[in-house]
Length: 358
Image (cartoon, rainbow, N blue to C red; front, side, top):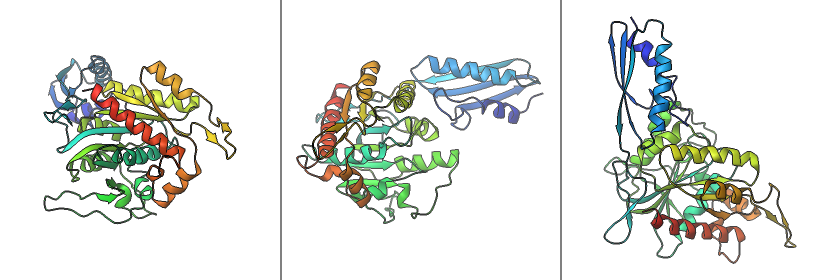
């Protein structure tokens, strides 16, 4: 007769489609019933994509059938409609997130993602947040560094003070350049590594989203870690995202991984606001442009995927220098920096895209 432990261990080999985390660690297994040699497993998930339950069923059935002691193995589903990922206009004409996964007081939650590291995703996230905060009407903006293993937002904003807690036991985010900021980098010193395994990474991520005083934000920007793993799935299961922005460079090796990120968000019904092509070109002092990482890759990929190319960011010395100094390049006047101008153009296009998705 199979044991409950054997069944759980078998199911822990079944990953959620498109992600690297298994269905057991994400709490999809709600009940296991063992009756002699027969086993019935009850799974609960929220999705509108009929392919997801089908793929999970196939994986779970195969995993159970591989247990020698099992006779009849049944997998049952409780499929719920997920919360809306697009914001709905309120009576005042703004946008309020709806559904159980909304963060109170936050109107729009935007994930900045990439399929691989090294494409400048944190640079895009930090400068887009600054540019959004300087948009007409001066929206209130927060920036959450969800990369627990390689947090860089604290450095990019020159923040080294540790956050405090309020009377409600919420973490009070640090304020820099008019933004509310939270990052694992604020909780560790420069030489400490964040050694966190799957369940702890999930817990920290949920705390950063749910237990930080993000009150009264028009936009909360989430700087995701590279790839399509545990933290990404935790986020899409924890909060209702308004949409995602995919960061890539023009070269094919980066575009391959960008497609994986787009596919991941598609599987969990998160709309893509657009693609940002970072390190698009280098312009020398004489005005000559050099396409160091190729040309046109972001535009072609955006067209192939049917999503907008919302911006092309040049390789710029000032962008690197100001990130190291804790002052994002988007704080510069647009007529002084082509990179700052590009980030402000992206901010305008992102703001324009959101009402269309409501």
